[in-house]
Length: 360
Ligand code: ADE
Image 1: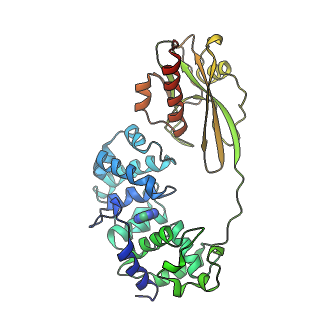
Image 2: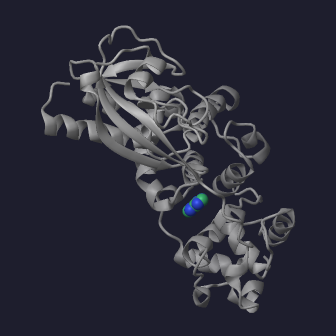
Image 3: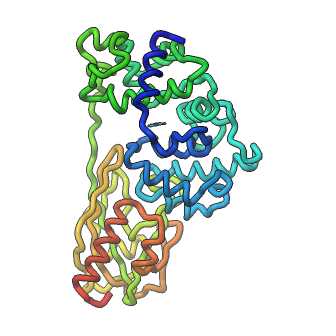
């Protein structure tokens, strides 16, 4: 075993967090679900989602058999929803093509939807102890510092490959992730506690945070889109399902102008919006503001400016750009997989109903 792997693994054996997906023996399905959830999402956020998920879909076969709508509901709030759609689809593929057994080798894993080199390496090494790398953003940061390397490129991967211990590859991969999460953090690395301090080139140069070289900040555009709690006069509002693919694909939302980085509908009024996207007319006297909710995507921030309005012809729906729509009570809406900002709009609607006592 390399001189780097030994102190790292010793440290990991002593300090690893007891996370629900780390129970021994490792369950390949648990490893897979957790790694998909942990992409782009913090451990603390993932824990309750993971636990609920395993209760709801205890095995890969349960997941494959579940309706997509239930899967999306269980993912609601985690973001990057294509991860859930791909996981569901991949579970069905494993049933069809591998007799329900998750394949141990990275090539077969990579053929599954949503499985790239990181997830394939993580499943292969953590669940099946195959001698392959799985480098996430934490471990890449650790390695950049260890080798005083400015960016996570192929050369860095080759350096990591050279120190990967074949007998405990999974533990090595997870130990690097853990070190990045607990000690070698992005802003304030705690080098005095680091098991690799003596070997760390960035530490020796006295500039650990200079590696990896910071990327230029991307500019985040802000868009304002009008959205409608459009009611039917008997306590229900119009909920619409977004197209299956693309941003927030398959999730339900209150009737809204298109949410995209180039949205240009900031001042479209409630009546025009209801007519354009649902073919409905609204009672002008019913239009009033309910508030605003915001959500930050990677490249842009959306503020939904929310209006209440009542439809005059609720039975004449003509949808534009939505896969489906239905009139939903507050209870019905709570059962649908909503985007995060639509959960907030639902709360605005509830509060409005409770406070105003006005006819819906
Ligand atoms: N992030 C990605 N994979 C992880 C794991 N297995 N444990 C903790 N954090 C992680």
